[in-house]
Amino acid sequence: MTWGNRSVLMEFVFLAYPSHLELRVLSFLGVSLVYTLIISGNVLIVVAIHTEARLHTPMYYFLGSLSGVEICYTAVVVPHILAHILQSEKTITVLGCATQMAFFIGLGSADCLLLAVMAYDRYVAICHPLRYPLIITMTLCVRLVIASVVIGLFLSLQLVAFIFSLPFCQARGLEHFFCDVPPVMRLVCANSHIHEQSVLVAATLAIAVPFLLIATSYAFIVAAVLKVQSSAGRHRAFSTCSSHLTVVVLQYGCCAFMYLRPNSSYDPKQDQFISLVYTLGTPLLNPLIYALRNSEMKEALGRVPARSSLSRDH
Image (cartoon, rainbow, N blue to C red; front, side):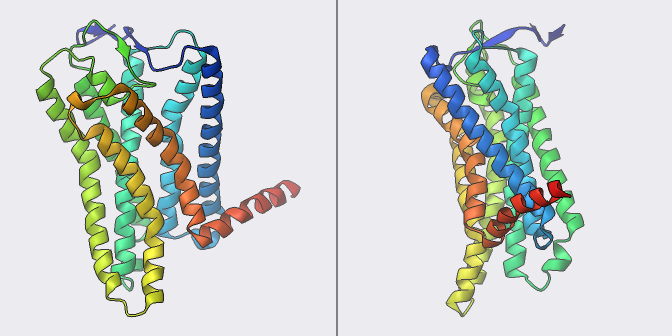
């Protein structure tokens, strides 16, 4: 069973995991705790939006979809990280590596595209408030979410098929915790400049283009808000966007650092830290940011435990 010029059962070895037992136990406990908080926080947001009638609006539908994507996104790599912390053999087959990378990059791209969709939603709400219900219908919301996931996975499949069609060197060691583009590209034995350009094009489509759409949306939003006469009105308009902007800076900052740069600047230790930030940190902070900065969301989350206890009583 082969793929290109290699067996799909050929294995890569992860080299970034700690070897000392104490560090492995601490790492396992720390990652387990963060992963539990990520799943709990994002599930709570999805449940709160689903059960709270006044949150059945496009803005919260997109937020719930973002939380759903982030649950799947972390599930692609975090259980794998936890398993490898405890295992003595930290290997993965080429097919397993390609599959993991396809879903990780695809759902990460969907995350970025959803943030662009959310920026467009805020632009229409603030700049065209009277036409907002006519433009941002629930049918359009569903189509935009599906399109974000489909486009993200499509771009990812193209990128992964390209990377794994390249010849790999004899070295099989990945200086990383999971299969990501920069560490896998380091094992490619070919004209790296041409291949780097191809990867940069794919990364630009998935990261830079959505970010440009977000920047354009917020340029129009700022221009519209500055025309508002009352300071209370300006504050209300900006407060609806502040949570989204904070998440955008976190997500796009990490992604741009990892993928929109030449392979020659790859630093294993630095990249391992950054990858943990956008794999664990951003999905953990997103529910906190939206919950703490949004009074409606805070109230809805507070009512979730009460609703669950009532449903158990009945």
